[in-house]
Each structure stands twice: as C-alpha cells, then as structure tokens.
Image (cartoon, rainbow, N blue to C red; front, side, top):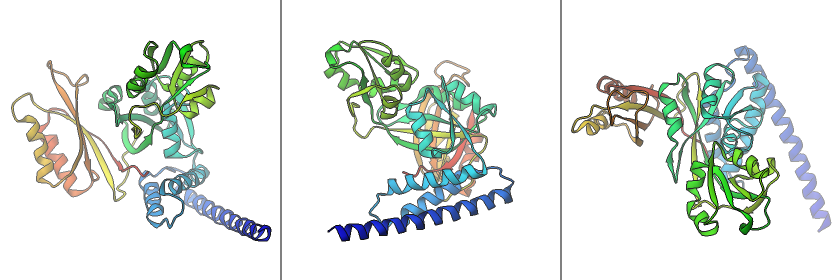
Length: 358
C-alpha cells in the first residue's frame, strides 16, 4: 500500500512539473503576442470565450466543466496581466456578489475597484478610471435590476460580456441565536429573494435595505442584534459567522451580470445582442416591434419593459429591453436592427457580446 501510494505521489509530482513547463511556455507566447500588439487591448472577450468553450468541449473528465473553465480563467488572467493589468469597477465594498462576478469573469489577476454606488461604477468606466465595469442586470427570482437598466439607456459604454453567477444567500451574524436578532440588513433584491425564509425564521426582525450585501455585512459586524444576507466572501471579510446557509427561497437563485466597456466584442461564434427601444402608444405597436425579428429569422431570448425616464415625452411611456441571439454584425441580425431603428422613436444597441460560459 505505502509503495503504491509513493509511486502515485511521484507521478503527481512529475505531472506538476510538466504543468509548470506548459504554463510557462504559454506565458512566454502570450508575452510575444503582447509585444506584437504593443501591449494594448489585452482583454479580448470573444477570444477568451472561444478558449473556454473549446476547453469545455474537449474536457475528458473527471473534472466537471465548471472547474475546468475556472482553472483556465485563472490561467488566462495570469497571462493577460503580462500584457496589461486591467482595472474593473464594481459595486462595493469588498465582498459583494458583483465582486465575485468580476473575479469569475476576469480572474484574480485583474484589479477590482469597488465603488459605493452603481452610478459611480458607470462613471469610473466612462471617465477611464477603470477599463471595464461589472453590473447586475437581472435575477432569476426577482427579475430585472431597475436602476442598472436605466443607466444603460444613456451611458456611452457597451456591453461586451456577461457573467452568470449562482448566488447563495447566507444569514451572517455575531449573535448566538436567531432570538437575539432584531434587524436584518441586505440589498433590496436579497431581502426579496429570502422573503419566505425570513418570514418563517425571523418574522419580527426589521428588514433594512442597503446598497449592497457587503455593506449589509459591514453594518451587521458593528451592531449588536443585527444580521446580514450575504455570501461567504463577505462573511470572511467582516469576520461574521454563517448562522444559516442557502436561505434564498429558490435554491437555483442565479444573477446575470454584464461587463461594460468602451467597445462591443467581436463575433465569437455564439453571441448575444442587447438593445433598448420604445414604441408608439397605439394598438399593435408591440406586435409590430417583434415583426422584423421574425421576418429575419432572429431568435429573441428576452423582452422586458420598464417605465422610461431618459426618453419620456408623455405619461406611461415604456422602454423595451430585448436580447436576441447573434452578433450585430451577422447579416440577419443587422437587417432586423436596421428595420427596428427606422420604426422605433427611441432605439439603442446596448452591445453584442459572447454568451456566458459556465
């Protein structure tokens, strides 16, 4: 038994040596690519998405696909930093789910920059204080994040990527029992996602919405009788005990984030295009809105409406947010977008980008 174990350990050591050699060679090739490009535009979302999809398709196991993509994201991130270390703005403080989404997408070699509000996140990227920004778009339980949709209407930034993050809401506290908790802090969406659990277990506790779950954890850490809804990262950051895990009402709770930057991504082969537009307030207007998509054989994957603030000219005017399959450069998508732009009073392509890789 001990001889077999020692033999296997030597085999692992040899494999580790080979891995290091291959990773070093990859880094050297990336560095040469950076030299040819003048160390500019290190982040290529369509290129990185293509690599991750290829690794998923070629994965022989036993590692699950999500673990493989996680490993390769870190490899890509480390190699990318040899060309350029990029800054990514996100809703802070440290420990938010948005930070987790940024790390999942860009890897740990990117520099995350936290901001106190989503408005500041957008402004940081618009002004060049950060190369990219990450913002929540919608949740599988609670739907769209309204304020971020409003900001998309008038920002010059483009959606160049997306991230899907399984969100595990935990109850964090320094109290020994639920009976000692009189107040629960959390982002408004998190409080809604955990409504049933809170009603059953903390029916008398005050629910206090704050700007982010990390802010909820920060407040709970400094206040007696308080708790927070947040993730594991926030628990470690603010030295809070996880009193109850996975307290969201939907165990498959997932949030979709978008990556924002100055430009669209180039086609990757599996893309999505997001747009926003308004329609005239008359019968059949919404049906007419969808006709160019159907006639050009473009599949729609999402449509949501929201009261317009940026474009309102009359009461009850709405903006529709639509996602379609394909890149804006694809002939069918381009034809549909041209027709929509000619019929909509307000029309904006928010960006074309690779579909999220798990």
